[in-house]
Length: 500
Image 1 (spheres, rainbow, N blue to C red):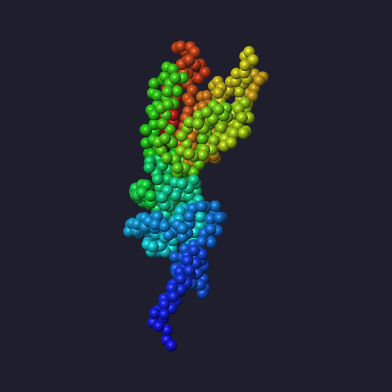
Image 2: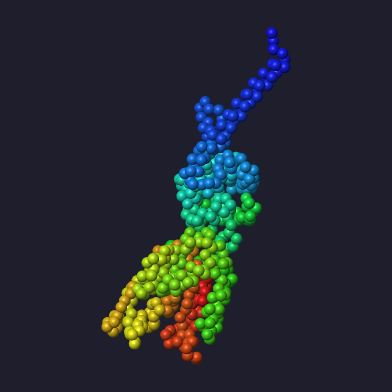
């Protein structure tokens, strides 16, 4: 006896429902557990080049990297992620139209966050694309750091840095060196950066001495914040001739960048007239100082260095002024204290982040003699050539001094500076050397080492009016205020933001 039609229909519906349930369970398994395990005889819903990471491998990668950022299906199925892919897709379509990118390009997204830019490249036909990040997520992102790319030289035709990745890298010079290494000659590097001022933008360009600027424009960022899109083309030869102002440059003169002179024009003016009460004028002028870091972004510098020349005690300026008052833009500065007086050396031993240079800054390496005289139990130190806080007088041999003679070592400050910092660093110098500035500053300018310094705070010593005795000048120094003003002017003309 045949089953009634209704019963047959129910059986077929149940079978179809069961089959759909099996397919749904299998689909859930592929998506959440086996996204990457599509092997031989294994059923898979996605072609190989679009497979998403499986849950197990994502969790394992997160455990290794320590990252709590959602990855894989948690992230790649969100509307925000899709909108970001579409944003980069529009960017790349314009670059393709302009000829900076082609379907046959081998492309790299440096420091990608979640691979949205990589997928956008693939969807625009640039199938040979990959990204690198500290949080690897194949097939879109391989493990790697922007400052240490895991690729051979001249591997890519196109490299892309999205949404301020270079700004946040912490090691921009190393980032740039790796781009120069792995980009093919004639290849293009496109970066989205947050540089708003000329100082910051030119600091960025200085990093890429392998490339030529093609164009720059402001575009909406992925989160609507405006970014600067910069297109660079790698040349066969490095283009920046002024590294240290010394490499192959017989004149040792560094080029004076226009953007640095622009900052100097915005700074507080120098005091043209000699103040009658300098002890009051200096305090007032300090309130008017326009720090470089208050006028420009310094993110595209490799290191941040403060050098206190004639530091004396830690509290004289490092602890009392630089640590507390200088605007650092949340950057961590390395501090060097150059101080020859052994009286102050001990207190620097336990100062974290401060390196003591126990010498006197001078124009060459040589031993400097000074004489100790005592008057009513006090110690007055006179030292040749104005080293440290001592009376400046002509140089004499050790035999011409009395019995109480001491000596210190002077170092060639220019040579020390060249060994210690680079042009990719941001360098601030405070100089209080009791008259030696009239020897050190000309040497810095003539040698080209002045290129290594961004900002200077200098006390110039001259025969100023005395506070104690109205109408009388100090006999300690022979230079005039006009000579000091000339020294400040020369520094500003050399492209250094110097403050009185």
